[in-house]
Image 1 (cartoon, helix red, strand yellow):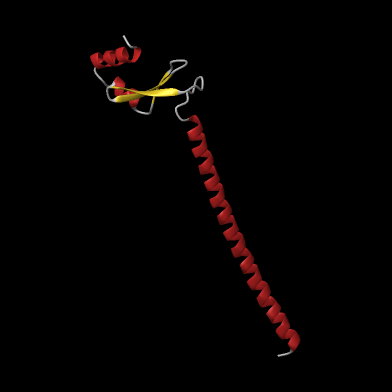
Image 2 (image 1 turned 45 degrees about the horizontal axis):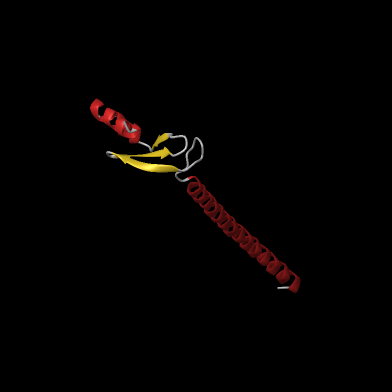
Length: 110
């Protein structure tokens, strides 16, 4: 086999292998970038949760957690807004009328 032909075959082989190595490196890089983006997004979401935890959505001041019977409510110390977590208001509304009145009396301090 002449040297020119062998050199061309070697060049073609290296070109194909380099192409595959580059594709593989791109896939790995894209995967790492997706993982980093996901970690960054998770960190930002966690930071937002910590920043807004027990802060009044209306005025931004601190809220306190109060347990009345079996329901925990969050109440703002500034605007006195009362906030329920998911399902808590439903649980309250499903109580009998006398229990609901008692809950609201305890809530308002009457």
